[in-house]
Image (cartoon, rainbow, N blue to C red; front, side, top):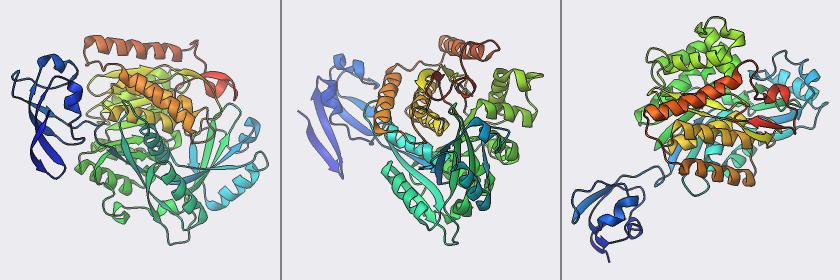
Length: 477
């Protein structure tokens, strides 16, 4: 039996004599780094990671892991109320000749667009915003037990002093996210976005950011917003306010946190190239997420696409974009992740590690928020110490659940399924990077590349599969 020999606060130091590892672990204080003088049979060490110096009277150090203490994740973005409308493809052509993506519009244009869309569909309101969706996903994924990291999530943004803002704050908190939402005093409305969903499940978005644009500097934020931060996730739209993005990233970096960013849309890549390059070249981004269209656009605006590949070889553009982003003379990131819609995803690390995941066959309802939930699944696994291969599988599992739901919210049953799937993925032993592991990951990447090639057999949901049709889905964005 253990006998306490010293105590300070909630920390007890014990002399222990035990044969069972479970008995030993029961005395561990979560989140603390303990040095325990103990007597322990060597036969019980098979399931404990520790350094053995002697068979008796040895010292075992337990270093806190991500599962002992909630990881603080902070999201930076626009708190946007999504307004969903199901519209015919032909009607969408009267709005834009480039389906997909997201563009800002002024309040008057938003009012007119909503009036027109209401003639095609009932309008459904769901709180959204890219970074908010990501932290909601992380918070809900962490809501279960098992191998998934616990997370304490916060979201930083600006709302209007209106009913929409109050509704947004309430519903965000109900999702397990701490709403660090400033309230505008200018009379500007809370941000909103119309999501035009066509029968194939693709979404085209137009946003009116209203009061959210008034958050321009981290000096406006409440003290302590970054306390304990392990990860700052920024949506790409914050690049329209580069000072805010830079200040928050620098503050997170000063506290040893990782920084991730999602490129959000091909239009943003075109419009914010200089702001993005400035952050990358100053080494302020660790993980970067893009979909295939955004990766191709990045190649085009930077002039790094392989010759002749701008239109007929997207796989070559994805590889070129990732090489640039990982290069110490280019993007300087640690991990570059590209989602490939119905074909899964590919991730590469600056250390040479690679990961790829194929798609799942599911029924597509709509693709709103699918890319955000992919990011949430990937980051949840990454923060738990998973390999890039496991992170890709986790991201695709999350994206597949998202396309089966209406809007950027998953029902509890979907999160139950997702947690179970992720726990199974993370239960697989992590492979230490080496030649064999690299070869296996490269083979997976090559298999996905083959599916991308002309004549490949994997269907593309956005172009070939109407809503309600089974389709291979990894992470549609």
